[in-house]
Image (cartoon, rainbow, N blue to C red; front, top):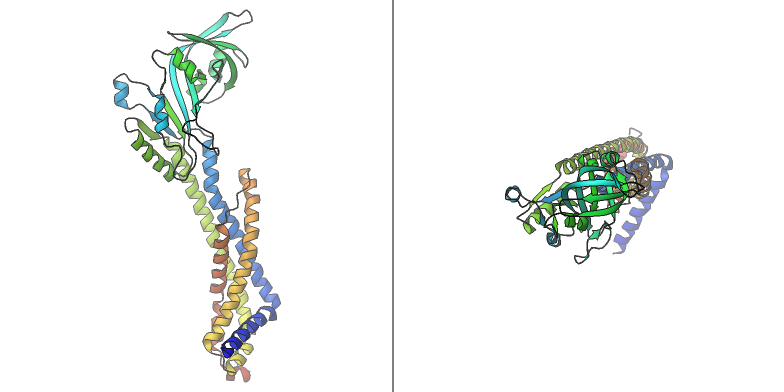
Length: 393
């Protein structure tokens, strides 16, 4: 036991001597490893964060899943669905992310704007859209007993084209009218959609239900914003279809497919860059290790002359390389995560969130690169002590 303990102390003493004997060259090796680990950690953190960032960015485009009556229901004259079906929908994805729901009811009618004399000065035919958001917004808790967030009955919004035809502006009074009823509201906003919604007038769901015939508690469709990757969205759609098999559940393909393609390209580019950085780092370290190997031939010859086994000599140099890789990885990974936060803010306008899984991965990759780059040192194990002492090495 004493001999084993003595050998172990001697082993680490020699390792410390190897680390500090050639400080200049080892500093260059350590610098290359730190630089490689920094770039690797930054790119990996950006790659992991890009999935979350793309998901949040695509939410701004609106819903990505629609629940509506089936074709057979429409053919039979049933063009609306029960509003209470909302309570059957899964409220979260498998990744526990909150899903947002919006109910829509479409009714053909007219809209009129009132002048200063409280009389309608212009009337246009339009599509009256009642809408309401169910549940909580992203990031908040969700309760299935939570009531819908209805827009106030006295408020309404209009698309840009509809407001222009009416000659209305924010604050104008609008009279919404159908064959059954009418409702007075205040125009609170004029929206630009760039689609057919520019010609529509939006009001609360309860107002639209009151204007329609036998439409209390009914909606034309539900629009869902389902967060997550395309695979997670598809899993949610499959679960929703099992809950409401009599309805048509379909994704808005251009959003989910575009998200998948963009992330795939970004991920591929970052993976290629990480691989290239690691290869360049390995080449730099290997070149420095080759010079170190030339300087250590006499030391190795002496160790072998006093009984040092070949495997122990190899283990010494591999331990030295592993320690350099570990130190370079620890320092570089921390710097890389900090760098990714800055790059995320510069590229996305919002700082990337540090992902702790990236830290051990970057350290492990840097250590592996350092060990593989120690390949030139393996030739030292074959040095013959006699050749070294005769000056032939």
